Length: 270
Image (cartoon, rainbow, N blue to C red):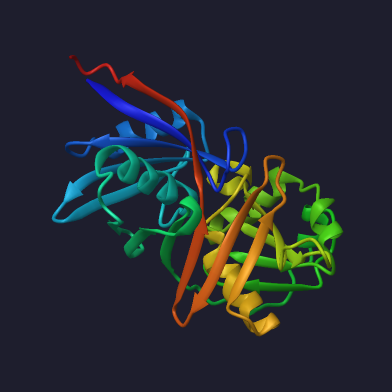
């Protein structure tokens, strides 16, 4: 069986920045084991699979080790493939997912706008070992769908050097990633910065993590008393995410760059 595969750099203005995602259109679902094997072979943070359903699509996301409930950058990449290759006359694409209905619409300046659920987090007592595992002690920790570690300044987030093996053991029972965040430096053009660590999901550090802004954007919206923000994920590749918080929804805006288009053969015959 041969399948088309697109590799797209999401939250990127050009190739080699942002977060790469593989996108595999399907006529019908493969088995979970086959999709996980493809994701492991791709060895990217996420591989997205989609099947036409009604007037939209059913969308699923896999890391190299697990299926996940929500992935922002691979959703952006999938919408980019659909709106540039499969349905170029459309202005919106709708996905049914494990996190409900997600829509992506065309925005200005070539950007795509994703409509995602806001996920609230509550302060928690800092786990004694967290600062040691991250390399810098956070000034506040919140927990919800994921764990948010808030630091005093952007430089603290930049110099984190996590111990990934103990961090993976700590996060695995909680099925969480750690979102490290701080106010951006004054004059940088950004409101806040992030880094995201998901060793329990097979991703030590993610390049740009759209779904993390469902957690962290509502926090900063309350803190900064503003609904429109620009965030910078300060990973090695880096990426910019524009966020707008509106009640129980978070609108995430970014651009994509095409990198690869090809065919994969999963060995089930032609």
